[in-house]
Structures are given as C-alpha cells and as structure tokens.
Amino acid sequence: MPDPRRQQGQQGEEIAVHLLQEAGMTIRERNWRCPAGELDIVAEEIAPDYATGEMAARWLVLVEVRSRRGSRYGPARAAFTPQKQVKLQEVAAHYIQSSAWTGPWRIDAVAVQLDAGGRLIEAEHIRHAIRG
Image 1 (cartoon, rainbow, N blue to C red):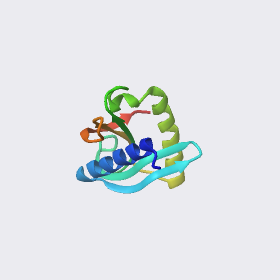
Image 2: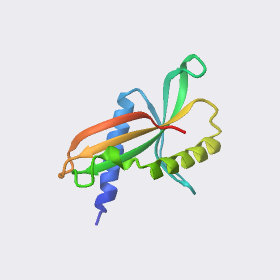
Image 3: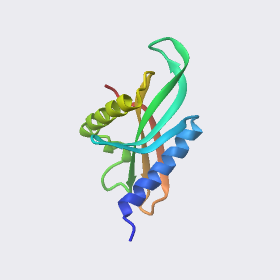
C-alpha cells in the first residue's frame, strides 16, 4: 500500500519541477542525498550575478520543496522553519563541495499548497529563500 505522505511529496516535487522548467531552469538532479540530508531538486539557471557584475552567469539552484494538503497545519510556506533552513545550508555545503561548484549558487524553495482532495491550489517559487 502506497504511503500517502510520500505520494504527496512526489506530487509536490513534480509540480515544482514543472514550475522551475517553465521559469527556464534546467533540472540537474533530483533527490540528491548525503550523510547530512537531502536536496529535493538541483537545477541550473542563467541569470545576472550582481556580486560580480556578470549579466549572464550560470547559477546552481538548490531547491527545497514543501507540500501541504489542506490548511490544518498552515500553509506550505510555513514549513520552512528556522531549523529546516539551517539543515538545508548544511546539505548545500556538502553538495557544493562534492560537485566542486565554483560559480554563484543559492537555495530556493517551492511551496505547494493542495486542497484536501490533493488538487493544486497554489505553487510558489521563492528565490533566495534561505540566506547564509
């Protein structure tokens, strides 16, 4: 018998992938794991790097997806707790090191809100969601 939470998570990730691709991102990896945890989606995007002045830099985008069904526990966006943010920064550091990435990178979030029946209400892409 399938796990409803896992199905909800997979549904949220599929919605997030579609949203990111529509925004012009290329999906590099999904469900990357290390001893510190997991990154739901690893993507790349061509965007300005204001720190260096480069107008078309290749960004590494590490994406956390949170899905909520119904409103009993609040909106999906509320699932990005301070503890979760610290954990994501730790996992991001592992990914950056293991991939030897030297360009700009950031952690984004996608909050997927579903109704009680599992139908999409809203999917919100939050760029630079977690700042180090």
